[in-house]
Image (cartoon, rainbow over all chains, first blue to last red; front, side, top):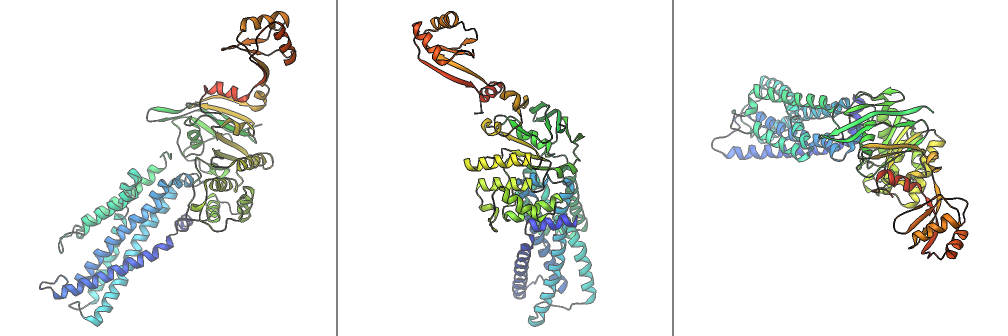
Length: 230
Length: 306
């Protein structure tokens, strides 16, 4: 499986994604700093503590990388159908479900890892920037950090599952735009809302959506074995 | 010769329509099997079923006398294929594509890549991405990819599409060489008879999903007959001369004042003389060959092949 995954990475030149991830992170960072500055001049400020800031950052990071995952799904799975390289791939002496599983594991791990790393790095950077600018009110405590880390781990796991949901929409008509649009809609649904009333903040909803993503991946993998490739 | 591939009542139904109906074909080891039929006859569907891309609705396929099932992946190691247009990861170079192919096929002989590229005369392509290749170059690269793992069965769907006449000749020589020297079995489809008759040992003719005939080329080459074609407005008079003056029996009056004379003992010159003496007006008189083309045109019903 590791071999198949490394072949996928080579074939689709996925190392080039790192650049995209860096750019996305810079934009998130810039946006967060901007919001913090604007927020300072508001009468009722949104970010009243480090907890609030990290919460905002996490929602942002998750949203960006769930959409990123859909682009990756488009490239690894849907594009193979569109350019018909899938018939080449499925003529290799390797079970189709293994080939597809390798692709989906890449997407899942990519989403999970980029969310964790980005959130940690950006969180640290925000803390460091705040050291000079003092724009975030309150103190950063160890309890808060520990709390955030647990939230981050579980949240990234759900998000990685949610990142697979667009596969369902993309596979119906083998459309990359459907894949990406469905992820944008999904992200808007779970990240939109006011303060704590975000859909994504209800653990039950996040867990269910994450499981739905995994279920979609599972069904796609099972179905692929009997599909006709024309 | 033992058979390398055999299908029994192979059938594929798409949306209630039979794209392939009860095809029974036998490909013998070491031969070049030409799969001939007009566009849309079901050639590609049969090939997709052989390579396990499409699952048959009915019937079965045997590869090396082993039944092919949806889980038969190991057998794919022993095949090399191009189905329809050759597809590549076209942002990668030719060599990268072949390297990947080797990795997926479990074939790690680096020398094989250079050999295959040289065989299809694609050396010196540097690191250009395949995207920039012409159709002919892609076709050559596709053939290189399918033969680099030295498969026992090579399946080529319309392999010379997009090649120029020189390229076609070169590929024909490559196919012959693969068969004679490497002992590969080739299944080559085409809608052009002229393309196939020169290389194939056996030809299977398919039309509207049905395999009409499977014949060894040797046996139909023998079917070729020579005849003299006489064109005249005075058919009755001409027939009289043929029967009574020349004592010929083996001839046939066709439509539109054409008579075909199959008797071997008579020369064109003698015919001419007798007809002139018999006062028959001759519009034309010429020696013709009943070609393979006529044979296949008859089978297929006159459309699509030439």
